[in-house]
Amino acid sequence: MSIVTCIAPVNIAVIKYWGKRDEQLILPVNDSISASLDTDQLCAKTTIMASADFDADRIWLNGREESINNPRLQNCLREIKKRAQLSPEMENWKLHICSKNNFPTAAGLASSAAGYACLSAALAKLYRVEGDISSIARCGSGSACRSVYGGFVRWYAGTDPNGNDSIAKQIVPASHWPEMRILILVVNEERKKTSSAIGMKNGVLTSELLKYRAEHCVPKRVEEMNQAIMTKNFEKFAQLMMKDSNQMHAVCLDTSPPCFYLNDVSFGVIDLIHAYNEASNRVKVGYTNDAGPNTVLYLLEKDVPEVLGLLDYYFPSKPVDNVEYKRGNPPASAPL
Ligand code: PMV
Image 1: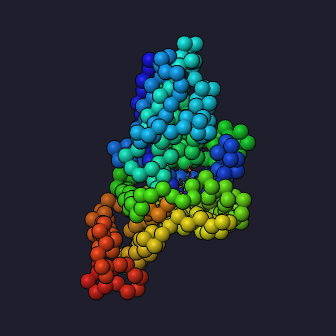
Image 2 (image 1 turned 90 degrees about the vertical axis):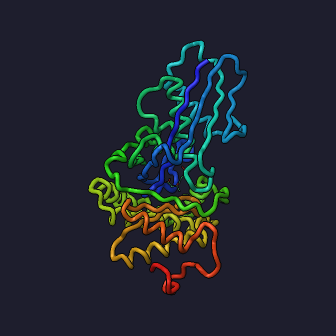
Image 3 (image 1 turned 180 degrees about the vertical axis):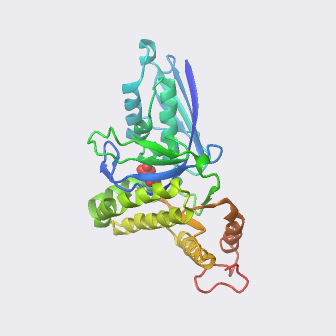
C-alpha cells in the first residue's frame, strides 16, 4: 500500500480565462493571470491510497462518494499514467481518492481549480512524476493549471495544437508583493446555475465579443498586467483587473443564451468600490468576479481596515433595514 497527501490553493484570476479553442484538450483562447492564495487559507486537501487490496478506483469529494468515471478525472489519471514510473506490481493497484475543500464548492470560488491541482500533485507524488504538472491539472479544469504554483501565475495559451506549450508558469512568488491582500466576499454559497464549461462553450459558439476580446484585448492587457505585477504598480494592476472582469461578464451577456453570474449584491459592491476609489482620488481597491456572484477584492494591507469598515457598513453580514448602498445618494452618516 502507498499513501500520499497534498494541499493546493485556490487561485483568483486577475486576467480571465474564458473560452476554449480545444474542448477536449482544454486549450484556452487567451493567456490568463492569477494569484494563488496562501495554502493556510482556501485550499483543497487530497489523500490518495493505492493498494492491491482495493477492487476498484473510487473517489470521495467532501465526504460524499462521486463517480470515478467523470471524464475530466479520467483525463488526469490517463495523462499522469503516461508519465508515471510504475512498477509492474503497482500497475494493477487501485486508488481510493479523498478530497476536501475548506470552502463552498462550485460557488465561483475556483473549487475545481484547487481540487484538480491537488489531485494532479498527489498523483504525481504517488507515481513519482517529475517536472511541470500544470498540463496534467489543466486536463481536469483549465484554471487548475495555475493552482499548481504559488504567487502570481500566468497560464500561456500556447499555439501547439496538441497543447504541449499550454502550461502555467510562476511570474513571481507571493513574497514579491507582501503588502497585497485579497478579500473574498461570499455573497452566495449556492452552486452556480450555468457551469463555466457550458458558459464558455456557448460563448465560443455565439459571442463575437469573446473573439474580439481574445484577439484584440487580452494579448495587450496580459503584458500590461505582467508589468504591473513586476513593478508593483497597484493602481494599474487594479484598473486592468476590473476592466478584464467586466469584459468577461460582458461576454457572458453577449452569449446565447446569456449567462448571468453577478447578482444585485455583486453590482452593489462594484459600484461601491468605484465610488470609494473616486472619493479617495486614487485606485485603492480593485475587484474581480469569476463565474459566480462572489466578488473578490484586491487591495494593499494598509487599506484593509477602512475597506472592511465600509463593507460592513453597506453590506453587513446580517442586513439591516435602510442601509443599502445607492450611488449618489449615500446616507448622511455613511463613510462616503
Ligand atoms: O477552470 P474552469 O473551467 O473552472 O474555468 C474558470 C474560469 C474563471 O474562473 C471564470 C476564470 C479564470 O481564469 O479562472
